[in-house]
Length: 193
View 1 (cartoon, rainbow, N blue to C red):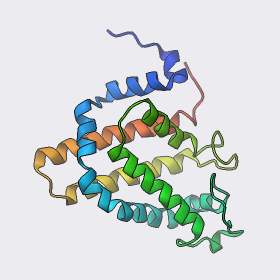
View 2: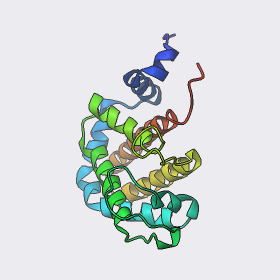
View 3: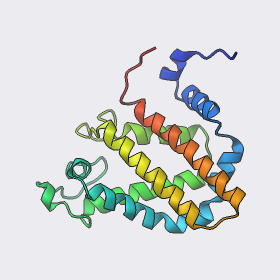
View 4: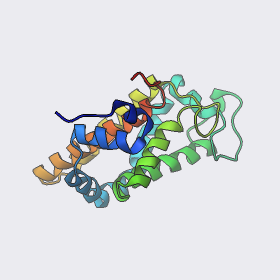
């Protein structure tokens, strides 16, 4: 039985990433599968981003979070939710960030810098980073992650890859998205060890 320093999982990002990756089974082969999908998925990033934002626009509980100042955004922010349209500059700004995130997933090495980036993605959705007014409820994050996972899987299936490549790619992305989800949750939960 391997000993796990549970306190380090709450205080050391690299230890946490390594632990969750090993537990889930994210391997170098999985990272190769993720990177191997770049040629197929990169051209589809705009459609994936549009699908995510179309979904977010369907509910006021998700859309309302874009009607507040966003870290790094310098333009006008609508005063009323009704004035926040899908083509508003703040939405275009957020779409660019989501597109950059999706491209990073399939192009960047999974090194310490990438782990910090994935953690920052979790943290930026709380008041702990970016705008102190930004606090996205965890239920909205969970719902969004589930939607993104489903959209990504549907996209991979639609590529008609060889069966083994398809299975490897889907399994690799599922592992990665669970790790990303953990890096969201860590910023919502306090240490319970």
